[in-house]
Image: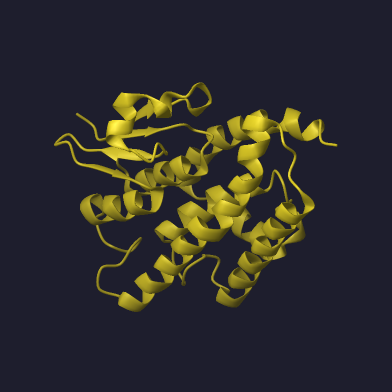
Length: 219
């Protein structure tokens, strides 16, 4: 039996895990959890993750872990042919990757969610302050990429941080176009050419379909 991944494709964190699995050449049994219909609040799912968030990974032996960043680190450690995506011994490189992952969870993805969640569930169009906060965050990412000057978000080679950033950045484009940030645009252009990027396409399209009508009706 395959390892199960619970999630919904429009979710950027869910897609980051799918990108990681593709890069590792492993197959997961994807089980759709429809957040719009409240499936994440049902008791059987809450037993797996009381935080009622996706993604959630479940191994055949009953081991369960949530949070996309933790899941990706686990997948690389268990299934990776090497540790290049998340190093075990190169502590300095791993520290940079960890910093990027924390930045994604605390700032990049979070500021996008503060816009997307009220818009999706309550039809509340984002305030200028929240849009400005996301714009500020994207400017920081653009500067990181410019300083790094490698085409990757954490060091000079691909890492699990790239899977988080590419899904968060392409989703954020709905609200603050990344075309105004040349380094982000170049980064996304590069990632789109990677074999694993195909795992981002369908979910991103579904996300756009959810938000386009709401954004058209903005005040």
